[in-house]
Amino acid sequence: MNSKTKTQKILVYLMMITICVITVGPFLYTLFIALKSATQGIYDGLLPTNPTLSNFIDAFHKTDFLLYLWNTVIVTGIAVVFNLLFSSMAGYALARIEFKGRSIVLTLIIATMTVPFQLYMAPLFQIAGELGLRNTHVGLAILQISTAFGIYFMRQAFLNVPKELEESAYLDGANRFVVWWKVAMPLVKPTVISLAIYTFTFTWGDYLWPLINTTDSSMYTISIGLAQMSQNFDGGNMKLISAASILTTIPSLLVFIWLQKYFISGQTDGAVKG
Amino acid sequence: MNRQPFSIIKRKWTKNLTPWVFLLPSILILGIFLVIPIVEAFRWSFLDYKIIADTSDFVGLANFREIFSDEIFWKALGNTILYVVIVLPLNILLPLFLAVLVNQKIRAVGAFRVLYYLPVITPIVVGALMWKMLYSQEGAISNILVSLGILDESMNFLTNSSTAIVAVAFITVWKGLGYYMVMYLANLQSISSQLYESASIDGANVFHKFTKITMPMMVPSMTLVSVLTIINGLKVFEEIALTTNGGPAGATTTLVMYIYDKFIDLDVSIASAAGLVLLVLAIVGSLLQMKLSSKREDDLKA
Image (cartoon, rainbow over all chains, first blue to last red; front, side, top):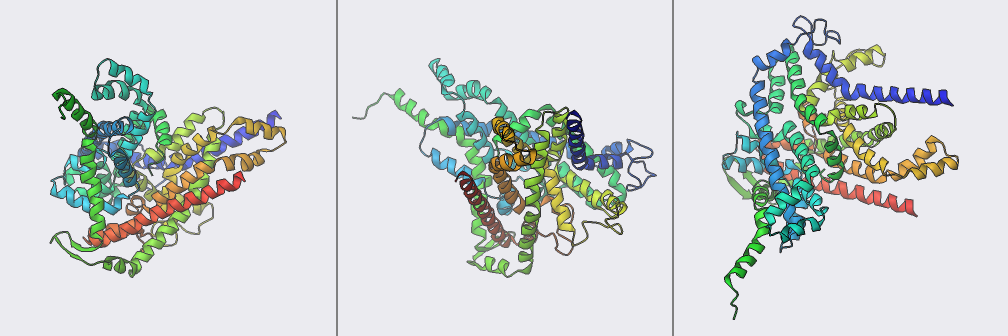
């Protein structure tokens, strides 16, 4: 009996490790390529024979990687701050305040969530141009400055906050905004963090909107920069691009390790987003 | 006779105004950057809209007639459906298998969950670049398959028209494994352990428990995974644009690649019409799936 469970256990671990090869393998493969020295071909053996960090250093020196990184940080920063602020404001009103037109606003928000971005990207491109948002950081962040998903997600969280907690604050003479900011917001902190993570991950890795809204290479985000590098450079520079790819993933990885449990809870609570 | 004190009127005003102050930033932003573009897309699909000349003649359904008589559109639609058909069963089953594995109370299981989630948080451009190298002629996958004797000679999976769409679909599956696993995990953990215990008493083995208890209880999350896979699958773009760019010879041109190409050619009315087709498919797909699964649930109850 005991030996049977032991072999079972070994089998389970073997399967789990095999799956790891699939999920993590591509990262290791890319890392190994990034570590290969100038004399070793990119597909020449799996492991780097003469491991070097020069490709990582060159990514900063020989390309505009640092500029792309900086653009992405600013765009993501704008998106996260404003999406949290505006979505939680709107979500709070839709959860807590009775007013005429509330159900219309709510229906409209839920309805827009099913519309694919690719349907309205051309008109959005035109509007962004007319408003002077082409090749600007704000222009790159507009998809995430306030989102239908964020509003819906925050509303669900506020609905679960017990009303009594807010009522005592009203008795103390606080107004709506104070109650929202001082009482309700701290109570939905996990949801706020989940929305921040969602906004971060989306904006950090977004490709299509930055692709059409940036024509000036000094405004490229990392995604666009990486894609352009891989198209413009010949195969010989794949080591450098591999290094840049690894570097691009590190911030996402750090955020993930830091806020792991919120990734999971945010995903299961917000499963409606699609 | 309507002589309320000024302060009451003022209070009433601020009371009516308060929700709109909360909503104002979002209404402005979503109005300008979401609602207006959507309305415009509907309008453009019935016009012959020239984005640079800014001329727009009403053409009725001519744009739809044009795309429906365009061979490339049908090819793109066919490829999109083929792609979804490849991804769907893999997305339903593989993450379920992963979830069952990491749902066990064994050592280091948390670390495995993290490692399975890694592709989810990876920017898609990075994912696509990595797989492009793996799939290349001298890349790892070709090497492995040749050394195992499955392939006679090395090949590039992305430039071969019979393998390209499968290769691209697998990138999608790889990126979603951890995401759907987490959905299944939540569902798995909601199943009462008493069900398994009483099944054990009745003499059920592991296989029976899985097929008779786990699978039926997982219907809600399987439905959710299917709907998300279909909706996201219809919109596939990055994996393809960054690896095959629709090739070879249109073998991976999907609906969104078609829309994107029309947009780049500034055929925005055609792009909008094709976008509406995409919207309809997305809505139909999710309605159909929901109906099917609610029927399955009814069957189970009966």
